[in-house]
Length: 145
View 1: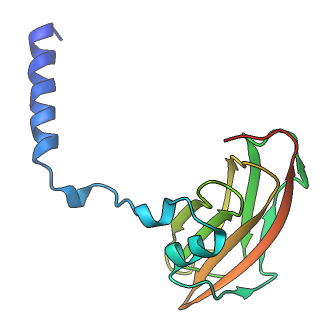
View 2: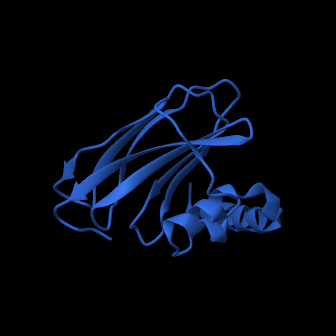
């Protein structure tokens, strides 16, 4: 491909992307990722702070994390939920992860997160109209964020 074809394709792609409606792009919820307390983060993301504590959600995380910039977290749920959330209480923005699930899916995910300091992790699963929550505390030796 020569330079003229590359520029023509680039201009065509740019014009096409500007013509796309905004509804095709992912939705950004500014309220969910604000700097708030954990209670306010629950209200912003879930619409309530009323949750049922359960042992059907397991959070696998180190008791002591040597580096807060990369803390491995795994969440396993026995509840067939429609949405799953992960919150870190003392982070600048407590909401870390949100995922919409298909019907009858048993949620499981693993990711590395940043933690500002030693804090409690909350995993929340929406099953029906109710929210179920489990938590675990992680001590951070070297701070991140």
